[in-house]
Length: 138
Ligand code: IDP
Ligand code: MG
Image (tube, rainbow, N blue to C red; front, side, top):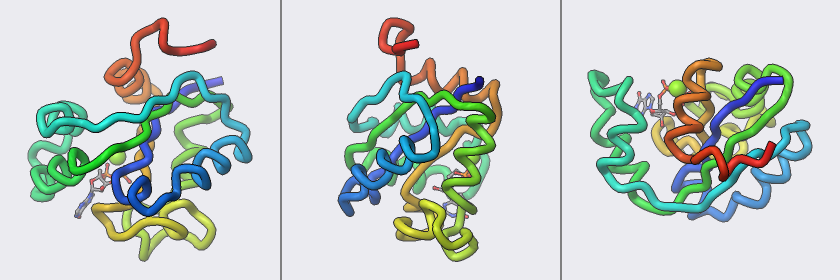
């Protein structure tokens, strides 16, 4: 078993896809360890995405990610990181396979509906960004 950190981004919350995406999480066999609804500040978003600080889209991305409420969740499954990334599809929804969450719900390459950790190590870091130990139900 392994873990991943996912977010339902501001566009998907605004477009009322939270229920569909949580249903998909359950259908794909993930166990929900923790889940919360919140709005990031610009500073929070900059901290979360600091690995992308040098990329040209960093500032816009942080502005966008702090523009409205999100859902953050810690999930567990076999191959959690890889499986969630398969379920969400490519970063750019135009390149995402049909049936993936980004193909179904994303607005654009930036406002692309969902986040998923990219490694087990980053999953641990990202889970601890959002959750304290007692907020995760084993
Ligand atoms: P990922 O979310 O598929 O792992 P990353 O390359 O880690 O993609 O980028 C993080 C986030 O930054 C993306 O999900 C997307 O919201 C945004 N992003 C990535 N590339 C671009 C771009 O070229 N233009 C605008 N936003 C981008
Ligand atoms: Mg990434």
